[in-house]
Image 1 (cartoon, one colour):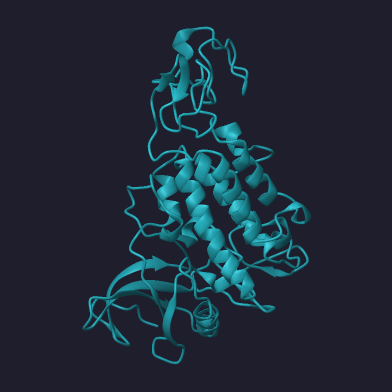
Image 2 (cartoon, rainbow, N blue to C red):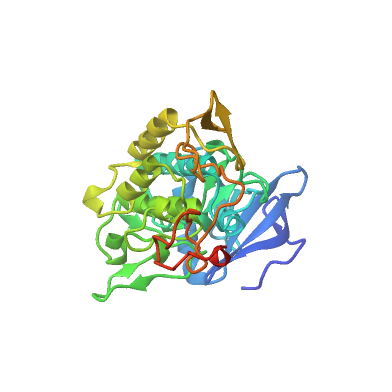
Length: 351
């Protein structure tokens, strides 16, 4: 099957450029031949995945929600077969995390997760489990450079091609393929975000998507994926306890997880309502109200030697010392790093 070129026509759309490639297919940006309207067109490059393309189109077309990328049209019998999707001009969450290696602003991270959970709540209610929630499958309708004030309605979840629909599993053309367990069972998805039961090839339900949400939340807050027993606040000082708690109830054994996406949303709404949200930008200093140090962003009281506001996470100190060995946050009065034990007695050793 030959690759589409600029100017080729699919249905009512003229192909402009290639915007994505997987092992079994490609995604092109295309424009309506009359109207100023752009779409994304998925094309399988392997004939055996044509049927999977059809299943994916049927799956996504049945999901109507503002936080889910819409399926507009499809023809598995056309030459080449195609699936036409809503085009999202903004970046993927993967790109945003990569440009914010120390973590996104707390408010943006929470709002993005709310958008993802709203999409999953709608999908789960329709009997669809995504099975591959990860930053690359979360699109944002904001400029790539602006991660400071993202709202839940600016989040779009895509690639439901791995979704389990009433017991039938579809395989997306944009995936790297299925893997097999030691017992020979086939599994699909991205290992770094995959729940233990999914990796083992066991039966899964909507809670498997919530496990992946926990990994994504941790990565948004810290810039890295979780390891061991780390909580987001262990990596990034100032992350409030309620986000640690939400992460823990997602990133745990299936029987201990939240029951569904709505329950996670309720936890985020309840705690953000009672705890001031992080601002779009870091506040370098704290102010004083009647002689008491307060955070300039949220107005909450803070200790005089606090480097970050414990209520909203904003930076209070002009310069925050770090351990030269592990880069963990330390205090000026510390003699040793509490994270790795490196001696900090010499000022020159601070970073």
